[in-house]
Length: 105
Figure 1: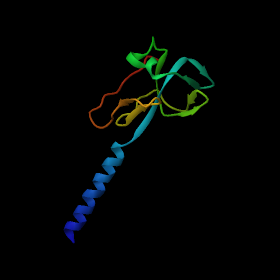
Figure 2 (figure 1 turned 180 degrees about the horizontal axis):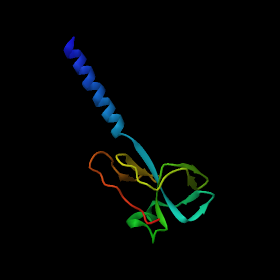
Figure 3 (figure 1 turned 180 degrees about the vertical axis):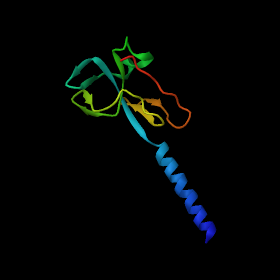
């Protein structure tokens, strides 16, 4: 009975760890100079490659997408999450030991 309880706890801890590590966040490349009412215009991913262009283009994490614009997200890169771009490219694999990025916007 005792070994069954230990196995169940180990399985529970493993399950919680996998759920915590599998958090996924979607990022959108936005044009920081083209906004309307707190929403930013979403542009193709390649605009954000190599740090964007003089702070104009940057990654915007999470949020609600509607009609080519996104709002209610954050410019702060989430830690420990797997981040994929709206275009489907993996930006960060997440997990332990990852590094935070920055934007110029």
